Image (cartoon, rainbow, N blue to C red):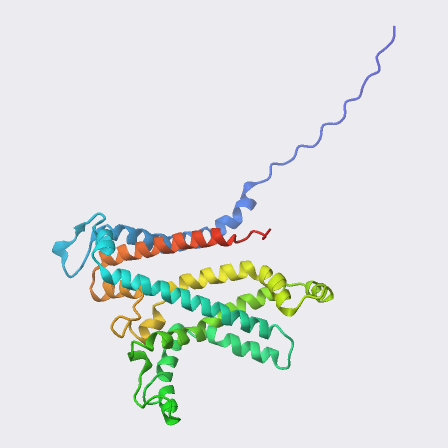
Length: 311
């Protein structure tokens, strides 16, 4: 009788200790207090604005306070011509400012990306206006536009214009004057972002293009611009939102005048809430501005194919 060979069983593998979940959750636990604090500071104002947009709330007229439903929104779209005027000017302001800032910022970025003597100093001078606050920028340009001591006096000395002219109080010159003031501070933002992206463009692409006989314009159009697409889309979107919400510069420069020529929607909201104390209607206007910005941002990102490679 044949005996079956005894088959030795392999030793059982050692039991793995169950990894503790605490180390994996530790980073989230550490940032949780700061995250909750930030959420509270952001969520409460947003929720309160939506709440008051449905209310009649004016501390100076408490007998009129109460639930208004969508009356504030109906009034804005059907009975308030100032709302449409300020919204139209806001769109004009954003379009002109962002377009000019992108154009000059791209040009400056291309210039300071070249190798030349004193490039570090040139970059510092180009980027320095971005470090200046909006109120200080406004104060600088208020002095420059001063009719007694500013640019117009020196232009009058050489026979251009007349003495006592104030560009900020003339409806025909206030818009270009405000545009120039904001350009001085906004152009470096585009120059910084675009220059940072230019640094990552491979030199081999330009060398290969030169070998193939491509001109400088063709290199810019087929190599530089496609590489800068995402940086341009992101910077224009951010700057458009900031310019739409621009209050400090226009408020300090013109106060929305003369005759309401430079009143943006955020300035109108500030006047409605702070001066007129009509917080319910101001909250409704803020909600409308939020929806407009959200919708335009989504459409812009969709149309620009942000984050996707061009086919």
